[in-house]
Length: 268
Image (cartoon, rainbow, N blue to C red; front, side):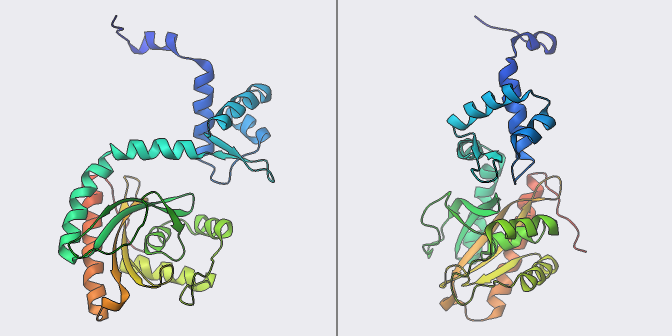
């Protein structure tokens, strides 16, 4: 039996409780620090008793989490899993693959696509060259943003207040003697990245790797992902090699952004 829906008749089939749950998730998506029950009820207009039952259900299915100390609700891991499934079918993955392959061939190095998720870097896709190295052991694994090229490349274009909040939440752990942990110097680094339009991180997380990364832009001029080339530090002969790779990454990320309908901001 086929159903022919119109805008007018479709409303008859809507489920109010599902609509409220979607509304709750939408509000939480705008609040990375989470919201307590009272604030969430005020924002959504949903009675506390109804909202509590919705949140309990969402928690059961890992769609939201509850911080035991702050009592703040945040988006949960199951949404991340669903997002990854969607991403596998999205334009970003489909289009990025072609550009990643081209970049890997041009640079002769491993290239990966990643994004910033809740202030951490998540690896999404990897493209090896004939002489590729083991950069990422597991896709969808998380690594810190402050000491990785992807993280630095994307943080550089976020509002300074948002960057400060990410650093407050995750800290600036030293993974080895090369890790930059001074916040003032880090903010200065972000200024340099904006001027150069790509980030270079040498051995600050993985001591053996030098990585070069540039952001991929969405339609609102916000970084939605990043392309990164990873090289063994021991095989990088001089800074000119890094500069050539940096320009290749920046150019490729710009082309990918434009094909996806993104717009890169003009450096100040």
